[in-house]
Each structure stands twice: as structure tokens, then as C-alpha cells.
Amino acid sequence: MENIRNFCIIAHIDHGKSTIADRLLQVTGTVSERDQQNQVLDDMDIERERGITIKSHAIQMDYAKEGVKYKLNLIDTPGHVDFSYEVSRSIAACEGALLIVDATQGIQAQTISNLYLAIEHDLEIIPVLNKMDLPNAMPDEVKDQIIDLIGCKEEDIIEASGKTGYGVEKILEEIILKIPAPKGDINAPLQALIFDSVFNNFRGIVAYFRIFNGTLKKGDNVKFFNTKKEYKADEIGVLRLTQEEKNVMYSGDVGYIISGIKTSSEVKVGDTITHTENPCLKAIGGFEDVKPMVYAGVYPIDPEDYEDLRSAVEKLQLNDASLTFQPESSVALGFGFRCGFLGLLHMEIIQERLEREFDMNVITTVPNVSYKVHTRKGEIIDVYNPSGLPDISQIDYIDEPFIVAQIILQVDFMGAVMKLCLDKRGSLKNTVYLTSNRVELSFDMPLGEIVFDFYDKLKSISKGYASFDYHQNGFRPAKLVRLEILLNGDQVDALSALIHVDNAYDFGKRICVKLKELIPRQQFDIAIQAAIGAKIISRETVKAVRKDVTAKCYGGDITRKRKLLEKQKKGKKRMRQVGNVQVPQSAFLAVLKLD
Image (cartoon, rainbow, N blue to C red):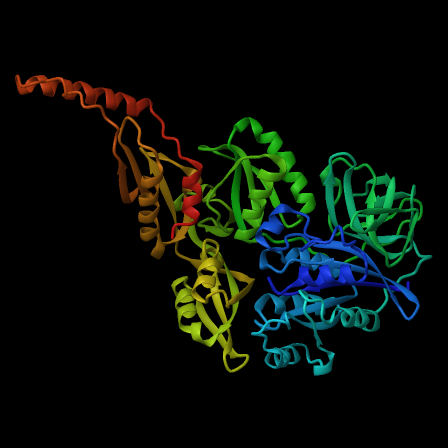
């Protein structure tokens, strides 16, 4: 155990975590020249295309120093705020963390929040200043920021470059010197923490674990502490570039177990694996369930695919424990699921993974957050969906969730960012100057306002420099109304939204104009209306495609033409009664990107 080091890499998005991980694998000879490529550990197509890490990736490396062989277990983590749950799980399985900071951009919001997670778990922090090869690097300035943040000495900060490999040997030496070896008792009852799992079509569910106490042999009878289910360890092993089978694993090791589990509900991330005969007395703690920030309905385009969608979402949940779902039905869309996501990027990635990995075409409704509705009878109802709102006569008041948003930006963009936050009903709490030209703003804001397009707008206003992080801060009363969209008098529940009364008129108008562009013309007029209760606040009309029935009348009495037009009018009226309007998928998506 003295020669094992478990560590993860934490940083803000795009500070070079995956590139440093590539270099570590190259220097330790874990990846052969033939298999070497950029972002070795990012095995999903979406991760490579977008250049972001979505999943944590664990891999074992061998490194020899002064004749002693060390086993290094590395977990590369995502940097985006929407995937912070992945980071918290990785941190629970480690003793140390590499804190990587981009020398050109300095400390950013997600750097700070990931760092606090690591400090809460008492991890040893090794600060690394990456991208030192770039001409616009500001090493002295950024070093001062790191010293202010974690209180280390200047000589503790390792200068490195993931691209050129400069400083990577120094990082490996520091990992061995500073990060403590795992503590644990090999002779104690088995205690292993599941920190991730994936579904394999041929082998069933593969669970990734870290052993804290005890030993695990191939063929042992094991049980999962929380679900109380018992299995046989058909195969155990360590995670190299491919899975490498072992006969026995000891305390401190990180690896995988295959035991022929077929149903996803039996494996819970954060559960403890122990032996059936000599079980441990308590589970490994410090692992909380995730709280979704954004809810949206996910429906199959073809109603017959409902069961396929269920199994696809269950398999995705295995691989992404921050996804929550429950069945629901909608008048317009049939049966589907109400899913909880950690943010809009998370929602987009899940939708894309459903299409790519499971060939599921889905419609996603307008995302919203959860509200607490206080009725006149004194009941409190949690509402995730505008259609679940009680009748307006029964509502006393509605509470909406608030967040504390921390935005770190350059002073030049301060005015524009403050205007954006105030437009989103935010109130400024605090301004802290980190350096002469970097400032941290703290805002109190409603979560519902940042769900749509806040992050995109913030990035474009600040030319990509502002970084944003948030945490929930209770509920407060708000004047909210249910905005309904009607097509020919029929309500489309997938487009209805709970919205603040000040924004309702403008938002309703914009949706109507957008739908007018997107809904194809029919043989009859289509009325698109936005309504609050019984009050119509906006209307647009998609004009009918009509044949010129009077084209054959040359001259003659006007009554001939009128007779033909009346006949056409009756037909159109009859058609409107039986005709229904199809809303294309692009219309649902356009509502999310109204600007």
C-alpha cells in the first residue's frame, strides 16, 4: 500500500486537464506510441467533438522512482459546472488532487468550487500552472492568485505545459512525495466504494470501485450494502487503457467488478461493496444524492418507443448518476419522462447521447425549475411542470428557488455583466477585487432566470472571459403566472411556462412570432395565441394556403364569384373543426433559443 497513490485532476473548463493527463500517460509508458492521441481518456465522440470532458475517467499508471515501483491511480474529471457531481464522486475515491490553473486565464469560478470540494475531503492539493509555453502567459500574476487562494509557497507551484510535456516529470515526483499513500487495513472486512458504473451489452453492469479496507478475490461472494443484493465476483481487475483482469485486489486499489448484474436499479453509485460471510458494519459515508437544478419533459417522437426510451434512460443513469427521472404524461405528446438535469448543457448532452448511443429520437419540452406552491388551505405543493399548477383561485402565493451566483470577470466587462444580471431580476450582494483588473461579483438571482440562455449571454458579453458558478440559496415568494400557448384554441402543454409577471407579455409575444415562422401553413387559418388564464395577451395568424376558386369566372355577375367564395368558406370552416396542427420539433427547440 505504501507504493499506491490515488489522485484526481481538477480545474475550470478548458484549463488543460485532459492534455496533462495525456502527458502523464505518455511519460509513464501507459499508452504506447501507436495508441497515443489527443484526449486519450475521453472515449465518447461528443467529448472529442466539443473538446470537453463529460465523464470522469480512471486509469492506472506504473512509475519507477529510485528503483521503487509506484502504482498511480489517476481520475481525470470534467470542468464544467453542469458535471460537478462527477467531480465530487472522483474526489471521494482519492487522497490527493492536482489543481491545474491556466497561466493565460488565471483562477476562475469553477477552479474555486472544485478546490473547496477537495479541501472538504482533506485532499492534498498540488498546484500546477499549465500552458506556460504560450506567449500570453502571465506566470507571476497567476502565481499570486494561487498563493492567495490556497496559501502555499511560490516554490510549491509547478510550472508545466501539457502540450510540450515541460514540467510533467516534476508533477510525477511531487505526486509521490506529497500525496499520502492510502490508509486501510488489509485484514479488516471488505469495504469498497462504487464511484461509477457502465452498462456492457454482453457482460451486464460493470461497477468501478475503490477498496478502502480488506481484500477482494476473484470468485468471492459479495453484497452491496444499501441494496442488500448478493452476487459472485465473476471478474475483477484494474483499469488500464483496457480492463486488465486480476485474481486478488487489496485495500487502496482502484478497479472494476463484473458480477452479471442485469438490472440498473441494483447498482447505486456511492454504495459500498462488502463480503457476504464477513460483512463490514457500516457503509462508507460522505456521499449525498444529487439535487437537479433544471427539469424538462423527454418524450419519444413515436409513442410506441416508450419502453425503449425507459431502458435507454435507465442505462444512461447508470453511467451518469446526476440524471433523475420519473414517468409523466402530456396531452400533446403522450407518455414520457420528467427528467432532472444539473443544467442546460447537461440536458443537451443527455439528449445527444440518447440519439447516438441508443438511436432514440426524443422531443424535449421547455426546461423549468421546481416551485413551491402555497395553497389557501395551507398545503405546500412541489410543482415541476406548469400543467401541475393548481387552479389560480386556490393559490395563496408561489415560492421560487434562488441561487447565489459568483461571477469572476475582467473589470472592462463589469458594466455589461451587471446589466445582464439586473435584467434577470438579480440583486448585487458583493464586489471583491481579486487583482487590479479582475473582480468577483456575487448576485442573488432566481434560478428560473438563468435556466434559458444566461450562460451563453454571459460568455458572449465578456468575450469568453467571465466564469460562472452558483449554488442554491433557498426559496422566496414571487409573482409568477402560467403562460399558455394555444393553437386554434387548443392548449399545447409542452410549450406552456411558469414565468414572472413582468416578463410574461414580452415572452408570450416572442413565442407567438417564432411559432408563426416555424409552423407550416395548412388549408385553414391557424390562430397562435399566448394567454394568461382567460386573458389573451398576444396573437399571430398563420394564413391558409387557398386555391383561387374564382379564377374560372370571366366577367358575369358578381353573385357567381360570391357563391364560389361562400362555398370555399364553408369548406374551410369544416376543415378547421376536424383539422389538427402538427408542431414540428424545431419549434420546441426554438423556444429555448428565442434570442
